[in-house]
Length: 175
Image (tube, rainbow, N blue to C red; front, side):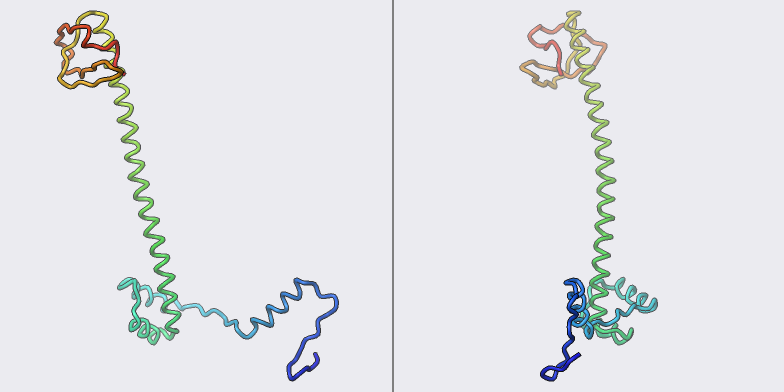
């Protein structure tokens, strides 16, 4: 090393690669600024968890009180609470997602069953309308009427009582 103007300057080797140069600059730049991360003890974590269970938000007085009790910096307490709230919110979203998914699956299954039932009822109505049209004797109809493709379709109330209906009142089939 040589001295220039009161500061020490490291002479670069002539064969230094760009990656080596960047690595060396990073070491010099951050050498004095890097502190080892201090881990919390289990008793500190338990105390912070109890405090979090009481109130998930941290006010200034509480932060200072906890930092004195636990021997931590107030900023460490604030960061711990912020991280804990983030984990708590993620867990809440996960629970909500699974509850909604379960509800969706249940409703989806119910819808599928109802669609199958509708298809069976439509098939039954088509069959009844076809039989009634062929035999010329029609089943007694209720007052509920649906218009499908310009034809009137009636819901069947009673399969045993039959009355003839005029041809204009019954469609060849109802989908």
